[in-house]
Length: 602
Image 1 (tube, one colour):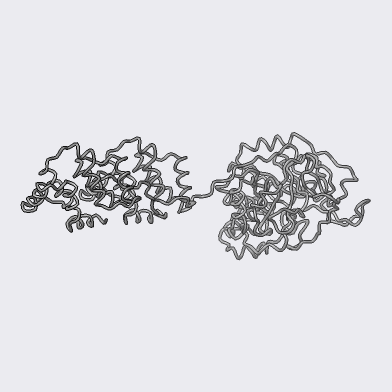
Image 2 (cartoon, rainbow, N blue to C red):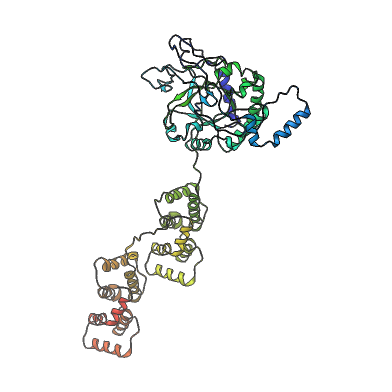
C-alpha cells in the first residue's frame, strides 16, 4: 500500500481509544500485561487457564538460515579504529561464519522456546455459535459478545500453514490477509517459502493483503537489511495494508534495551516509508506495555497480539490478533485471526487480471492480423478481447472467426469489387499477393455463379492458411457452404455454361437456384435440363432460323462448331419434317453429348 493511505491509518489511530473491558470479561484466554515469564493463574471463572501474549501460530522450528551480522557490539568504549576493523571483517565474512556468529535462527517468543511451541491456547468458548464470526451486525468473540470497534476480519499466515486454498478463503468471511514474506536479513534463503504463492493468489483473487517480517535484528545495520529484505519481495505487488515489523523474539531483540529496540525500529520504518509504503508494528501486549515504550512508537500503527475475548491494550491500535485457533475453510488446522479496529477499514480490491500466457499472445496476434488485413484498421480492445476469448475457449475455429470478419457489416460496407475481394483473401489467407493464373481462376468462379463464401472456403482450406494457423497456435477448421449452388459445384458450372451458350447472359440468382434444384433435388437428367434452356420462352424469343438453331445445338451440346457433312444431315432432317425437338434429342442421344456432360462430373 503506497504512502497516500497512511493518512487513513493516522486518522484511525487518533479517532478512538479502545474501550476497556470489565474484570469479569478479561479473564478468558491470555491477558497478562507484564514482561515476566508467563505463569498460570487461577481466576474466578477460568481457574487453571493459562494467560500469555502471542504471535502467529508458527508451529515447528524455523529452518537454519544465514544471517548478515555478528553479535551486537556496544557503541560505548569502542574507538574508531576498532569499529573500522570490525566493519571490514563484517563485509568479508562468509554466510557460514555469520551463521556461527548468530546461531540457528529459531523462534524464542512468548509462544516458542527454541522453536518449540510452549503454550496451548485454551480459550473458553460459549456453546451454540461460531467464535469470531459476524452475528447480528457485529463481530463476536469466543464467548459470543460483540467486539467493540471491530470492523474487518483477517488472518495472518506463513509457510507454517502449508499450501492454502485461497479460493476457499476468499469465499469465507475473511476480508484480508497479512502474509509473512520472510525473516531476518536480506537473504533469499530467508524468504518465506510460500510468500510468492500466497501473494500471487491474493492478488489473483482480489484479497486485500499486507506483509510482515519476523525480526532478529540486533542493530540498525540489520534493521536496514531486514527492510531491504521486505522491499525486494514486495516489489510489483499492490499492498492494501501496511508492512509490519514483527518484534517478539526474546533471544535476540529481547536482550536489547528499550531505546535500542526503538532505534532499530526507526531505521526499519524510515527505510520502508522512504520507499513509499505504509509501515506498522506488530508485538504482543506485554511488549507494547513494557518494551515498546519509546515515544517514537506512537507514530506507527500498532497491531496488538493478545489471545483473549477482548484486547486490554490501553493505547491506540488499529489491529488486534485475538487467537491462533481460528478455523477458516481452505487452511489446515488453526490459523491466526485478526480484526481491524477503531475506524481502520480495509477497502476492497479488484482481482488482478491473470498474466497473459504465450497462447493468449499468439491468439491476440492472429486476431489483430484479421483486423489489419480484412477491416483495414487497428483492432479495438472490446472486439479484440471478444474474438480472442472465442478462439481461446475453442468456441470457434480460425476459419469460423475469419469468416466472421469477411462477412461482417463493416467489411461488406467497403463494397469491394471481385478483384479487390480476391486480393484481400490472398493477403489474409495465403500471406502473399495474388498470382495472375490463380486470381483469374477465382474470379471465374465468381462469374460462374458461385458465392464469395465458396471462394473464401477455397482459401481457408489451403495449405498456406493451415500453416498460418499453426504458427499462431490455433485450430484452422473450415466453414460450411450455405447456398445450393456452392454445395453442387459441378451442376453450377454446367448450368452457367447453359446460361452463357443458350441465353447469352450470366445467370440470375433466382433462376440459377431453380435450375440447381431441378438437378440436385428433383434429380432431372442433364438432357432434360438442357432441353429446358433450349425451349425456354427466352430462347424462343430469339426467333432463330433452322440454320442458327442447328449451329447452336453443335455449340451447346457438342461444344464445337458444325462440320459440313453433319450440318447438312441435320438440315435434311428438318426438310423431311422433323421437329426441332426431334433434332434436340438426336443431339442429346449422341456419345459426344454424353462426353460433354461427363467432363463436368455429371
